[in-house]
Image: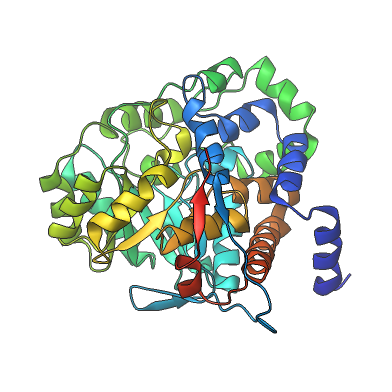
Length: 389
């Protein structure tokens, strides 16, 4: 089957991200599904992220003649073909082995940003050759600066050009659903784990071929390489409250754009601009960190107003469609990132999943633009909109 026929067949069978989600749930075991879907505590923030996005409504305009939307986006001197990218995700290989390689290849082919997490299951060195000039690196900041410097050096040497420093992990989150599902970090071979593998043979076969998912980037810096020792090393090194002095020091160590991820207050956004950061991520960690937070889309307008166009604004959390991307762009985001949508795609379709996810999002975004009577990103930001109760 030609690629064109394959793409058409997939679009007919899985026309929306929700279809990929349903298929992914069938193909992966409970422990992976719960890790992928969970928020924290009662999942209130996770759910509110979706509810708040859906409240944004628009007034369409018609009689505009033939429209051909243009959605190319310029960030930090580089042109991307889409105003959306692939968000950083931890323990990715639990959902599907080699997923980072699949995502990196798709980012190169379709020319959109791909952000690799420090806590991904593949290393910068292994991912780097597959991503072209589209690599962003997300740093979970170690307590010891010398380790942070080593991680930055490895990312830079592997071809990553944009640094994203995550600031919203002052303490590990409480993800009860993953505990109830039997997830242990690092993953252990238990009777329950074996049963989940037996009942999900495609996932199990791919996992056996690659090996149990582990935090391979961090493992390079642990004295002992067994999974338990690496987990203890991560628990000791990662997390804790950061300071402005620390993140400024990291910015000065990086030769390229640097963004702060997890900004939810306009005062922090203003401070980031004053200290010379190249951009910010308005994000609540996808609802996975603190269950009493506002949704990012609720705080985005105030942050956009506060920075007054002086910095690049990226956005994530709760985005599941091209229409959601348009919603975030309309409120002032420059680039919108998605995590779970891409996990659904690869978990559902393997090597075809990332490309198919991109095609769904692109089709939905352009469809929404034409229905609203617009064909440029500038017009998206000028759309007349209301936020319903």
